[in-house]
Image 1: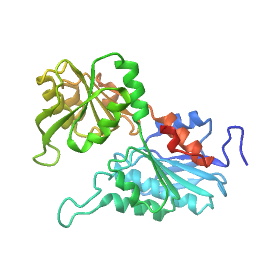
Image 2: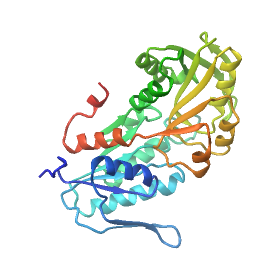
Image 3: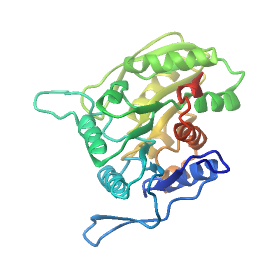
Length: 319
């Protein structure tokens, strides 16, 4: 049976990882949260109690597995288990930022493929479907044995570029060779040229820019990536672009992990601004940084959730 909003038994339950995004999604859908307690015991074990009947309902669990990644992942698993034991109709794990995604292959002997392990845990807990945004590697969809929708934040980013930088002489720049497909897609959408930063990473967490492939002189450069973590790659790339004659450098990333000294590094860099989505809750340091700006993916996620509930096409969101 459908309600006034067209939702057929649709209910939302949010973990504690990113309450502001969850509330924005609930507001977009005009739905209240399911009454539940999600808290910790004194020894930090997760406790969940769903305080209303969800039998036969289409449940959407909102939880990013961002910092603290292990706590938020465990919270997601326990919520899913509680709902499964309450006889829901279907559980969709809505994970705006999927942690462990960068461990998607063996990088050396005797190393794990942690993204696959996490996919197994979520499936084993009882999720029937996963909805996420800009997975670090597309093959992670294949790690799940349940339907997995990987949304793209690109339409939200394109609108922001048009609003703030429309009419400028733009050039999209991939910060590394691995991100060329993403950068090319954005360049095509906004009718801009493409350049590539050729960098050599000597060790994990450090990067050295070697060369710029493309003529960036006099151009407004847009560095685009899926994740900005330490900020070192973005800041080094900005330095190289300015030294090659770029007029200004902006950066866009879906997921603002921004760990360690990333915020201070960005604030003192040549980047005019770094724009990230609200897939990860912002720290106070991020909110106060003058050249970090956040845009919301709540309407995108909310619309995808509505379509899943109504058994409609999700991919047509990007046509």
